[in-house]
Length: 504
Image (cartoon, one colour):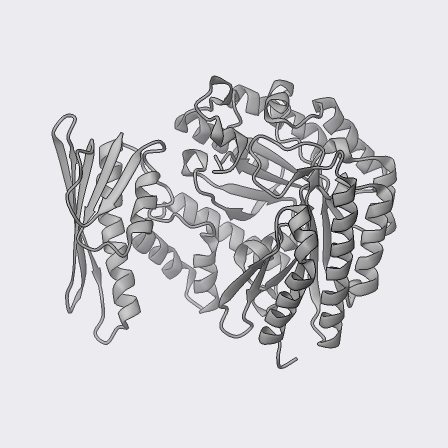
């Protein structure tokens, strides 16, 4: 399938192309102001700005059967509106017209409307912060973005849970959270694009990485202490932080308590122990020693053939045994991740995974929908039979079942995010028992405060305390590159922090 968009206004190419991609996963797409070169599907988009508003028209022609569809949309622009507002209304008019003809042509209704971004709940938070009544906020989301009533309800439920878990969510910009990336795993999963390197045979890299990490922790911690900047949460991700030895973990957490200010006031420390094959009694004892109050143990699936295919290299039985081991060690805030749409899995397989999860009942559960990430092994070999995935309808049924199951067992949704190339154009949703929400997940997804990233592949996200403007700095992903650059990266982060917190 070849799709060509011919548009009179080309400055919105990226956004409009993303809308087309919602409907045609494997289409070859072109975008220009001029005619196409023989595409199967042609969409003509025209737009005009008037005194009273912005107008757009879309005309779709399927050259394979000669069918045609057209749509028109107008967005009001009040007198005296800024140029930025006028442009935004023009973009929305074009997006609405385009979405309408594509939905009618394919029969696929997009529950998220014209939204293609990662963080839809930010739109509702923006309105809540401004004091917009909830009924008006719902109406704006439906009219401006064409989001379905059901998805708006999900957004509302999540925002409510977030403000219950963090009543001061809108007042945390004078604090920071810390993300620490440990880039090692026993093996790399087929769907993964995170910084994750085989720990076997890389002890030199591990030692050098830990030296750099301890340096970053010391320098950033001392800066925060000197400038009286508090820490809200600390999150150890990766990779799999429990891939390193118990002794190395012990030294890492000792450094956290030595260097980071006010650890007695930090609200949450999370360690991803996502790979069950990295969990040992010795490592659990270290976590208990340092009061780590939240860990993740991620089955992804309870189908052994699936685990073997995606490179998880642990057994279903091992997931259950390590979960029970953690429970016996006193861990009472455990998260688990499940993935909908893994290769070879449909609704029956997902039902089995849910049934096994019901026997364990972790405090929180994140339900991911598989995303074909550009750099993953699974994406590179997507056409092969072994990576065949369920169709859109079955993916939707699996998500519906996840919603029913979490409701049945008393879990409430508390955060969501979306990704490119996510199956069924759905979302990833975090559920938790009331009071067991991950505060870090709320803060990072809603971009409510600065996250300082330490370690391999960690991205620092600096949120200006007054304006909310966001800037980013990324550490190198590969251990050797990180070892060569950690001092320079630390200096850059400190300079950014000085800009944000100059008045502290």
